[in-house]
Length: 136
Image 1: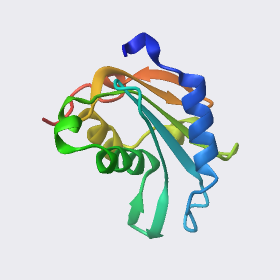
Image 2: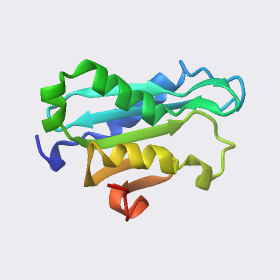
Image 3: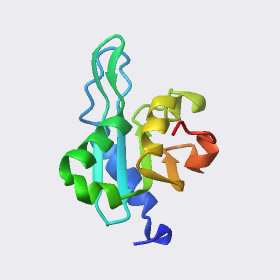
């Protein structure tokens, strides 16, 4: 599977669907994420808010689901081709729709730097555009 095999509309649909399962009593902002790997797998995640300061972003949960599914050996060769995020509220301003720095850093460990980050209702970006200097 190569970069051209990404299905961004499908990933956005999956992210929108999983956002309905969000646990977000603090922010009341349901977020979903869907990852597509170079092996053809798709993993989803939604945000989970336990308390203020104790939050799992949708992107983090999707990566954790990917890690839990894959064996250690398989994970070392698997890379994320694309991730789509979707915030299931129309009143959220564009800058607040982007993945946070922590999520971008986590993604940089598993994603090609030219991997696509599709942000629902905003557009598509390469990881290197949003995180030009990842911590190694």
